[in-house]
Picture 1 (cartoon, rainbow, N blue to C red):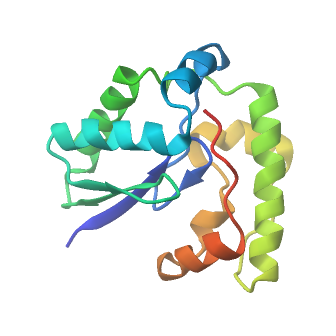
Picture 2 (cartoon, one colour):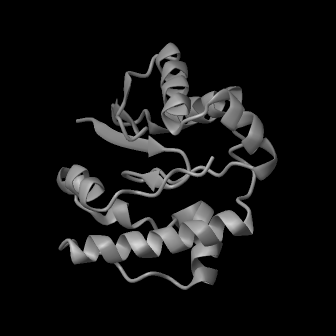
Picture 3 (cartoon, rainbow, N blue to C red):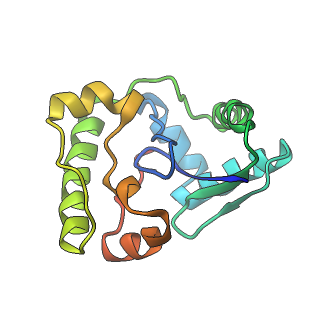
Length: 163
C-alpha cells in the first residue's frame, strides 16, 4: 500500500500535508529566482528526485509522491531540506496580511465548492484560522474526495500560491 501526497507551496494541500509559509523578507529573492509557482515546484521536485523520491509535478504546480508506509517522516525531512536549499524559510511565521488573504480566499473557495455540490465544513473564525494555520490549517479543497479533486480544482480554482 502506498500513500499519495500532493504538495503546493502555501495555499494548497492534499492528504495531511499543510501549506508552507514563506517569510515576506525572502519573497522578492524567491520570486526573482522562480518567477512562477511551477518553476519553484519543478525545482523542488528535482531536489526530491535527487534524494531518491519519485515525484511528479502537475500543471497546477502540485507535487505528488507515492510513499511506502513508514517513509512519510523521511520524506518530510527531505522535503524541508529541499525547501531550505531552494531558499524557502519553512519556519518563518506567515504575515498577518498573508493570513488574511489566505482566509478570504479559502472562504470564497469553500462557497464555490459547496455551490458545486461538495460538502465543505463551515469556515472557522479568523482567529481560529490564524491560530491553527501551522498545525491544522482549514483548506476547503482538502475536504473534497481525492477522486474528485481534479473536478473541484476545475470548478473552483485554488488561489494562486503565496510565495
